[in-house]
Length: 218
Image (cartoon, rainbow, N blue to C red; front, top):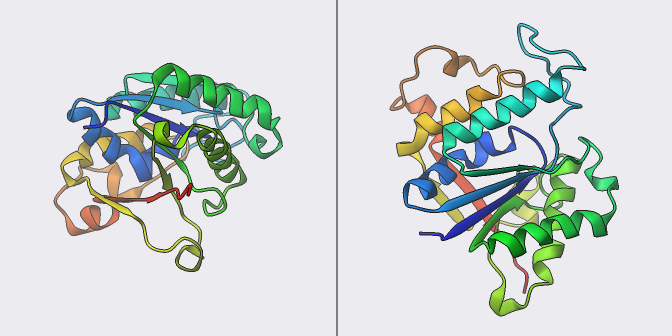
């Protein structure tokens, strides 16, 4: 069991597809989870299908969706840090790192999840992962929590190889699906909109395993 897990991601919904089952599994085993979400995803292009948001209302809608997703997973501590969507790479690095460092010092995590810098497709993903890696890298080696990273780039094999961690989350597919569906302004996952068969091959193959790369500090 992990004593306390810290998740640092830039957008509402980043937790849903790649991480929600793993978090639900840890929470069932007694772990505390703090989720630091850097932005409200207010610059997202999707407004729902059918449309449920406007450029003005999207931030408040995504804030509520994020809370609903965290409730579905069981996350006990959600922090919304208030940075601007699609600008994380341009934020003052000292400010960004100091906000992350303050949370690390407060919750003293035994494990951190973020994106793998350079292998996570979106500039906000890469910049968030880079900030976490910079900050954790300053912690003395003997006190440093491991950092598990999500990665999606096409060049993973050549760049960082196979994942180090494979989590079977089939038992937690109900929480994962509800986390995904909470972000209804962003996703229309056709096979999840009707009654879900959590034992179907399609669902299990797509959502039943979550993969992570352990960041190699040394």
